[in-house]
Length: 369
Image (tube, rainbow, N blue to C red; front, side, top):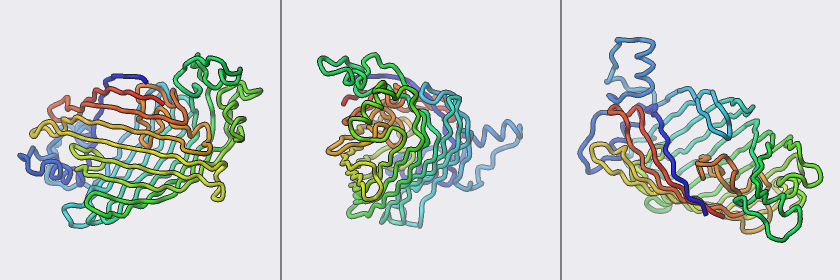
């Protein structure tokens, strides 16, 4: 079990059409705050750079689509540059309908990673149906540190020590990755949804320079569980129960989100191996200020547990293996992993500038498996 604290910061590109409803939803029963159209965002920054002196049109209703540069850097991917588009909109006229959001991005990194994704989370009018899905195509470089948290193996044979990798030596695994996932949820009660779907995770041209003679953790794992060294498919059915009372699905100020799911990989739909996995996701948000609802205390727990069968080595749960690549965010992707993984986090979000163009986060993490 590990405990980690850290600090990060971020900026927001506001969704003009969506943010108005976000503010209205977030302040039900509270004193109204300032008009968000008057807040400073990426569009205002661009206007000040390219059209200095031009005043903002606070009466203009934007398209709800924001396009921004996608610039980042971390030890997993190196330096990244790309472009990202985010859209948000409420469908229909029912005031209880939750915000629908979609995003797409294309980027390249200094470590040779090329990544494209398209995802969506759509609520039909009245929240009768919820559609969640994603499409990913990528050329990846995945760091491999072995299974577990780097503890030495007492007893066992030589391959057990290679798999545990107590020295946490890093191996770079190159591959082509494709994912197609879609889930459909039906509302069965207020804020409660039942859902089902499919996920196809495909890796091709997997290359690890040290795979000969059980020399790396991935080669040991693949040999033990009967997976090919250079490719796999993890195709499965998804069955989920979801509860969401969040005021906004993209940037929540208050409410609860919970999802419990079963994934059943099946060879008859192309999966390399059969497997059953249980996943849990729980989030709770508290807005701490009426005048500045962006000041939020949030709690999150995510877990993934192999119940039966075998899943591919690069699909094992671990750090940055949740849907948003956030679990164990103080460490590089897959620094810790195993057949069982659980991550608990608390974070405090707060505006830094008065115009809320820059905000900050401080967080603490605790995880184990």
